[in-house]
Structure formats: structure tokens, C-alpha cells
Image 1 (cartoon, rainbow, N blue to C red):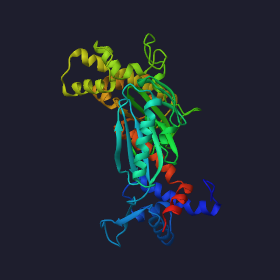
Image 2: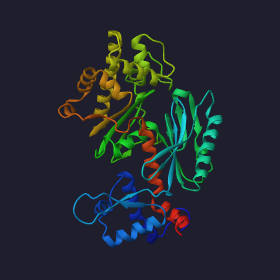
Image 3: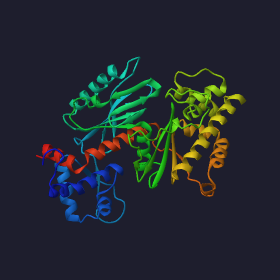
Image 4: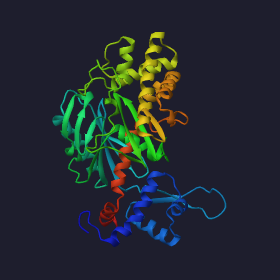
Length: 397
């Protein structure tokens, strides 16, 4: 085997191992018995497979507590020296480097702010932090994933509106690790997290929306995002659902972005454009929740909630999802003005959807969604048959 080229026998040898490890990642705490039943593994084949994965430092198991009569089973989990995924969380306010293992445990390795720097000056610093974290783990990092609060295509940043950045090569972010680099938009990654292990789990078609500075999202079919020809799909915030007199930092006018986040709340309250729309929005919604607001503030929240509900109705008419999940400011906005949101949502639906509208649920993973989705992509890469074969060749005594 060279590179990702594998013989048929080698691929078959590692394909069931791949299925098992992905199941362990998707369902933390799963028992050996449940995993074998799910994969239809005979006891002898299961014993050989699990022993092979333990020897390769890909899997660990320990006894489960007794849950009834019969022989006790074991719980499958991450090996303490198993593979890791490194995640770069490039948010509007700053960046972080995190490491996650097969059990879903996440630790922060580095963090920083952008200042006034452009990508050409900033990205090498972030890449250095990734490389340093990987070196400390002595080859355990098997994939690097960047979660970006902007439009991306492949490993290129197309636009980071809140920073005023355009067209930058993110390939440097692998940090000289020699492992694959994957890049995803933060809202898309949050959608992956909800579809695989959150509020949209089990939905064949799910719509996920993240309101932070503007609104992004993703349509996911069978847990996989529909990202378009360039990988930049889901920029719902730049649909012309807003006031055409308002100019958006993206270069367009009338964007929905400007109607549903902290900038909208500030405009309706008569305040100047906030420097941090997300923090401003959280403060306003917290004040509403605690009852410390005026009628003007309530009207501002209601107008913004209506704009959110009406826009979601339009997207439901477009995509016909089974479920809708909300993250960022959206859950708080809906909770602060439930009547206004519900009226706008139902009123904007086509008649064929109104009788049985898709449920709208708060995201289970909340602000952690982009990182959780990035880890899921990282472990998709790490647990592929070819990647497992390479890891085993290096690690098995």
C-alpha cells in the first residue's frame, strides 16, 4: 500500500474497523454488545477486531456497570494514546486551536486575537500554534480542520465579512503537520453536529441556521451538507430579504443578515451600529428575558423576531426540510418574542407546509456546534480505511 492506494483485501480488512470506530465516536458510551449487534458482528469476529484495534491504540474498553442478568459487557471508547483531530476555530472575535479525541473530549491548545492584521500576517501565527500542538502529541494528530466564520471553498477563504477579509489561502493552516487539512464554514459545521448527534438527528433533510454576526446555515441531507459548486453554499444571510436601502459589508444591498442580528436590534432601538453585534444582541435578549426593558426595546425584539420567522418560512418553502435547528442568537430571539416569531413563521409558509410545518428546535450543541461538526469531519478522515491502515502500520507493536 502506498499513499491512499490500498489492495482490496486491505480495504476490506479495515472497512469494518472504520464502521466500528465511527459508531464509537457517534455514540459515546456504547457497549461492545450493542456495537456488535448494530454491525451484525459474530462474537469471534468482534473479539478479533476489537483486539486488533486495541493493539493499534485505536480503541479502549472497560467494564460496564451491571444493567441486568447475564454476563457483564464492556464499554468501548477512545484509547488514551489514540488519534486526535486538531480544530482551528476562526470566530469573528478571535481564534482558538483545540484537540479532540474519539471520545469527544476537547482541550484548548492555544488562543489569540486578530487585532488589525490581515490574513497574510495572521495565518502563519495560527499555523504555528497548530504545528506546536501537533508536535507535543508526537504524531497523534491525524487531521486538521478549520471552522471559519466566513465563506470558504476548498481550502480558500472567499470572504470574511465581519473582518473585511477577502480571498486568502488557508492551506498554510496545516502547520507543517503533514496531515490532511479540511475547511468548513462555521454554520455548516454546526449543522453537521446537529444532524449527526443533535436536535436534527434522524431527519433525512434538515435546515440549520446560525445567527451570530449575520446568519449562515446549511441544508443537510442524510447528515451531509449541500454546499454547492464551490463549497460556499448556505450563505442564507445574503438573500435579498431585507431593506434594499441597507448596504451589507458583503457588497450587496438588502441582505437578510442586517434584519436578524445585533445590528437590526440596534437600528430598531435607535442605537449606533454596535462594534460587536453578537455581544450586543446577547445583552439585549438577556435584558428582555429578565424584564429590564422598555416598550421600545420589546418592539425592537419583536420586529427582529418577525424577520427571522418570515425568512425561515421562505427557506422551508425552498428546501422542504423535515426539521429546522437554530443556534447563536436565534434561540434567544425566538424565546424573547415567541408570538411574533410564530406568526411570521406560519404566515410565511405555503399552504402545503402550514398544516404540518417542520418543527423548529434549538440546537443541542449551541455555541459548540461548529467545533463539534469540525471534529466529526476530522474523525471521518481519521477513521477512513486507508488512514486506519497507515496509523496501524506505525503504532502496532
